[in-house]
Image (cartoon, rainbow, N blue to C red; front, side, top):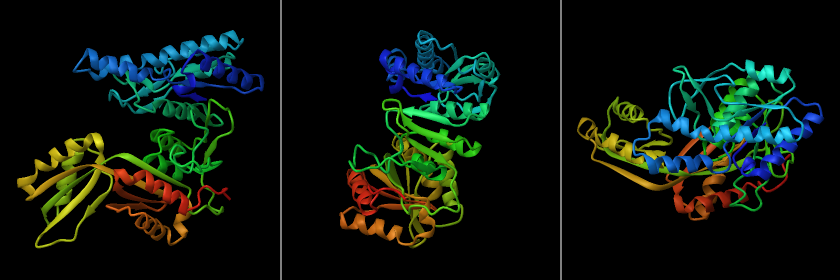
Length: 402
């Protein structure tokens, strides 16, 4: 069971989590907890670091940020002790999480969960600090935002658990953001592929890396609420013999920007040189469109995360003379809207309906990208929320699933 920051945000919430765990123990379940820092504590620690330092070395940032989870696991163990439930807290390193050496966004290399197994055999509830581990250089590392989800999934795999239950402040995975669309519906189940597309294209929970890990290792997920305790959304392997709803969800991502490189020489290797330069600067490119050649030159447009726009523009401008680039134009006011569903593979007309609906709403499509179960369109940022609403309506996602 993984509990996010809002789930353990204050003493009452921590006691509620302890009570929930105690009930499962009385039912005969063996339970392992993964806990995030309380509330907005990670944000507070980052804010203080910015006030103290302009350099903020990665090693020290990881040491600072992971302190929030260590505090939370101790408090959860104390609450369990009051209910007569024996528990033991473990930092990421004590739990056996070995990571690479990249600070502030480390990747898990191995989980040596021997101490967690020993605690379970001793009748204890292990309470593990989320989003942290120890590097191959023996430094404390932070797994990045959403890292507690990944910790829980990796631990579930290492322990051969029945499932990883990800408790959060929403009651499951919805057909779209319920804050935008009142008729958004919680789904009882969803396939790994569908959820992976959702998290990659704007759905904030669970963390995309945790879904990738679950897909790779076959860990069953249950996304549910730590406030209502109701059953949430199960994430399972897709059944090839089962008929799927054509469209399952509409998601959007506002953290997008567009770069247009104009007047590029239309010859082999130019695109390769441009995108290699972007990769070398750590720029994550998403949608790419290249216009038809005109008089030996072409234009290339692509989208990047908002905070990488300046880096992308700078990297492209550095190639002006080499590639004959006429201009590099950055546009920070774009967004991505995506239609997702496993049933799209065998149902023609999904794209036509999407484009017709956006046209009728007066929403211009700037760029398009697709996968077998997703269609994404780049639109003006100011149109994104309206696009979500009209698409959710036209595909009738408010209706009961079959």
